[in-house]
Image (cartoon, rainbow over all chains, first blue to last red; front, side, top):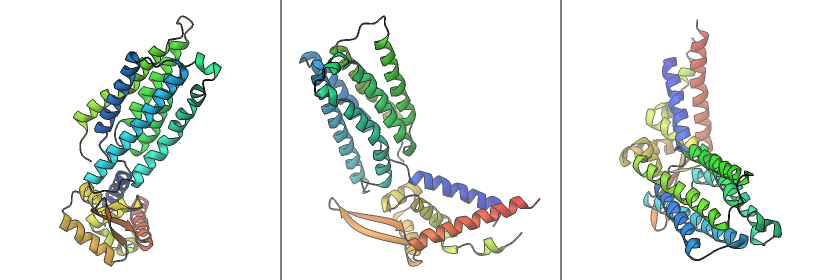
Length: 206
Length: 103
């Protein structure tokens, strides 16, 4: 065997090993569904007033739980349609990668749900911190996915940090809860819709 | 150049498609028949034939089950399959290493 042939073969082996370890489910339906859910969830509090730290945290934690359930249902349907196991090693890796930041985001909401005094004054912190943590989750998952998930994660990290800086700027007054709902709708609803549409037109079968 | 690593290459694994199947399974505890077929762009018949060869050599375990009333065939490497794959990689690396030693 020619050494160059052996080197090419090693390259092919490496490529195939990397490919088999990647999460291959189509992401555009998941992103679009989460985007619609996020937008609707941000619009409802404008009509039926959901104010206060407890209301805000509860409302968006419920929406997040629904979004997770939706994502899992769509991924499971895709796996069934392709006659593949849902709980595959790549799915496990992605789940394990996103779990710590998502769990931190959920735990962060606990004092707000309990209606602690200090929490009432800093409800506006939640959207920014959730965006940063969600960005970290996407970035971690991006190591096991082929798309630009890490870049999408960075947009949340930078967006959340920007929001935090903007709202803590001494020139600005701390925003009302309605603005926090708006930030959630734009960040999570709008962000997923935009990325879902981008993937819809660019995503090819694995 | 020492011809030994080349002579020791496992003929079962060395075939292009079977090497691809082994590579994918080496990176994942198991993969479904569909995943292998789609990723490697093979026909059902072609993939089945190569899987059978690997199975007969004791390198591959095939599990047939049902998921939501649909048949689900999954493949995984046996311990001897993992060892054979690791040995094959070692030999390929040895061939490359020897070539680098030659001025």
